[in-house]
Image (cartoon, rainbow, N blue to C red; front, side):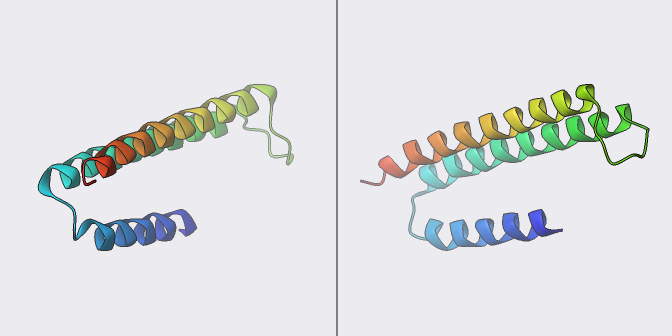
Length: 95
């Protein structure tokens, strides 16, 4: 829930900033948003799969689960970095 609120807030702030952007820049920023969202969906699926590997309810994650969650975080960070670079490139077109 908290993640959804943050995504919504970021989207709204981008929409406000995007109001003065050209159509090309807006399209590129939309592509960046899609890259970020796809990475988020992929990472979430990876984390769900990681949770399913550790069926023991003892408050401890298995080494396999920890590795899978670290991989999911790496996917999320890579998607964010790629989307940020795409947005930066789009912003430079305005100048």
